[in-house]
Amino acid sequence: MRAYYVRTFSFFKEVFFISKEAPQLNGEIRDKEVRVITSDGEQLGIMSAKEAQSEADKRGQDLVKIAPQAKPPVVKIMDYSKFRYEQAKREKENRKKQKTIDTKEIRLSLNIDIGDFNTKANQAKKFLSKGDKLKVSIRLRGREMAHSDLGITTMDRFAAALGEDINVDKAPKLEGRQILMFVSSKQGK
Figure 1 (cartoon, one colour):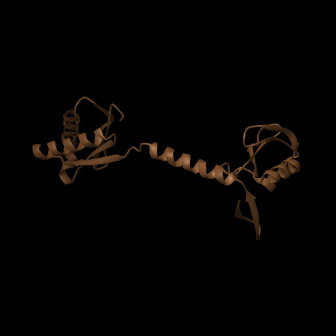
Figure 2 (cartoon, helix red, strand yellow; figure 1 turned 180 degrees about the vertical axis):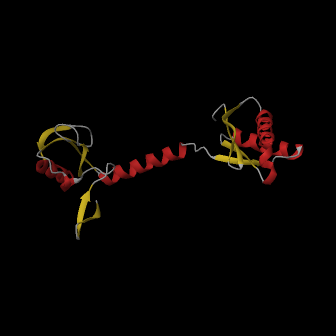
Figure 3 (tube, helix red, strand yellow; figure 1 turned 90 degrees about the vertical axis):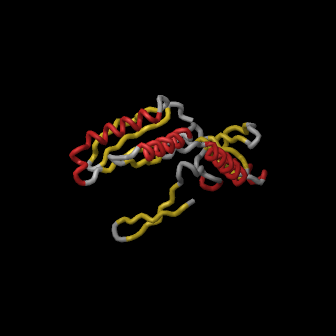
């Protein structure tokens, strides 16, 4: 249980609270009556919190409130440290299985040559095949601002070079001194 200090008027007061992740344990359970379940799933019935705590102490385990919203609240007699360890292990496995989608950026220029254009298109195809999203940008400098329509045609040509298996999430648009376009793959690998 963590202590948080809250300022009230001219002095500090220590305030204890339990987050949603941390259930109430042993002496923290202050309910008059609780429904008790063992670690095997066997129901011991409804009893006072003190009786439940003494039963948990007899078994050498912890008393954990698992359903505080129930009437009466449900507590379970279990080895809490082992439970936390297994829960952390499950969460770690779930994080491993998650696929994070990165946004990669490719910068083009208004007067890009065909060789550079093809190289950037090939790099973009690699990013899209890995399942990443793509941000394509053209920075307009100086007098290029007067020819923003050329930048938009370059972006359209780039999208066509990537092939048919892409989605243009956001069409090319002039935003300040940049023309931006967002692209993703149709088959979200």
